[in-house]
Amino acid sequence: MARRIGLLGGSFNPAHRAHRRMSLAAMDALGLDEVWWLVSPGNPLKDKARDMAPYAARLASARLQARRSRIKVSDFELKAGTRYTVDTLAALTARWPRARFIWLMGEDTVPQFHQWKDWRGLARMVPIAVLSRPGYDDDARAARAMGWLRRFVRPADQAINWTEWSAPAIIFLRLPPDRTSATGLRASNPDWHRRFTMKPRRATRP
Ligand SMILES: Nc1ncnc2c1ncn2[C@@H]1O[C@H](COP(=O)(O)OP(=O)(O)OP(=O)(O)O)[C@@H](O)[C@H]1O
Ligand SMILES: O=C(O)c1ccc[n+]([C@@H]2O[C@H](COP(=O)([O-])O)[C@@H](O)[C@H]2O)c1
Image (cartoon, rainbow, N blue to C red):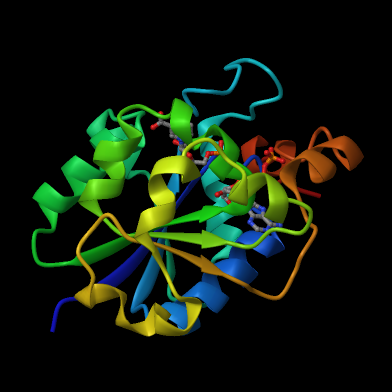
C-alpha cells in the first residue's frame, strides 16, 4: 500500500512542542504513516535577516522535538534548491511517485495563502489539511484564498478517507489547542540557537 505522508513546512525558528503535538494529532486523524517536517531555507514571505537563526540550528531543534516519533525532519528544500512550496511538491512527487502526500498548515498561514506562488496550482497537486491554531479560526475562514477554496472543503469526519479524494480538497481539523509559538519562545530566549551552534569544548586534562 502507498505510504501516507503528511508534509509540514516551516521555519522551525525554533521547533516547539505544538509542532510535535499537532503533527501527532494529524497523524491520528488522517491515518498517516509519517509526518515530514520540511525545514525551510527561507520562507519567501518572511524578511530574511530578521530574527532567523542559522539553518543548522533550526534543523537541530526540529530533530530534538521530533525524537522517538514517526515525525521525520527533512532538509529536502535545501538539497533540492526549492523555496516555494509548489516547487517543493513537484520535486517530492517526482522523487516519490508512489507515496501519497497531504500538505499540513496551521490556520494562521491561511490568510496569506493567496500570496503563495501558484497557490491554486499547489492546491491542485495535493490535498490540504488546515490545523486549528488558537486565535486564528475567524481569520482563516475569512481568508481571501477561501473564496476559491471553499467549494473544495471536505467534512472533518471524513479525514481518514483523504487518499480517495482528488485535489483540490481541503479539510479543517480541530486539534487540541496549544498556544506555543516560535515568536514567544524567541522573545523569552533570543539566544535559543546557541546551544545548537556552539562548538563542543575540548576536554582539558586535570
Ligand atoms: N501552536 C500552533 N498551533 C497550530 N499550528 C501551529 C502552531 N505553531 C505553529 N504552527 C504551524 O506550524 C507550521 C510551521 O510554523 P512555524 O515554524 O512558523 O512556527 P510558528 O510558531 O508559527 O513561528 P513564528 O511565531 O515565528 O511565526 C505553520 O504551518 C504554522 O501555522
Ligand atoms: O510557496 C510560497 O510562496 C510560500 C510562501 C510562504 C510560506 N510558504 C511555506 O509555508 C510554510 C510555513 O512557513 P513559516 O515560515 O510560516 O513556518 C513553509 O514551508 C514555507 O516555505 C510558502
